[in-house]
Image (cartoon, rainbow, N blue to C red; front, side, top):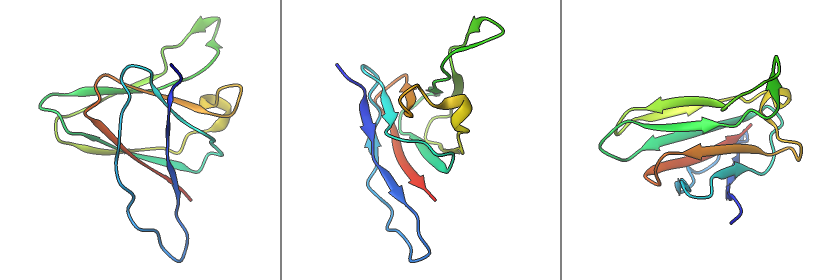
Length: 112
């Protein structure tokens, strides 16, 4: 199955209404359809224990593949991530892969 897209809300000087949260897809993974280095992601862990979110880093560093940036999010916490430098985080097609350990991770994504 393909990864599940995360909806990106543009923030403007006119304002933006807080979008609905999206569930993490712990089976297929999630992705950002584009990344120009101006993306901020809100992650909520709505479970009773700490969970991980991983932002994919394609390619290798000194010939070694990376697992991506893995960050633990405490139970019930809201954590904000970004921006994501395109030269580090973008896949060949310009997307960013986002993986979670459980579907109880919730997302809101903002672009400014």
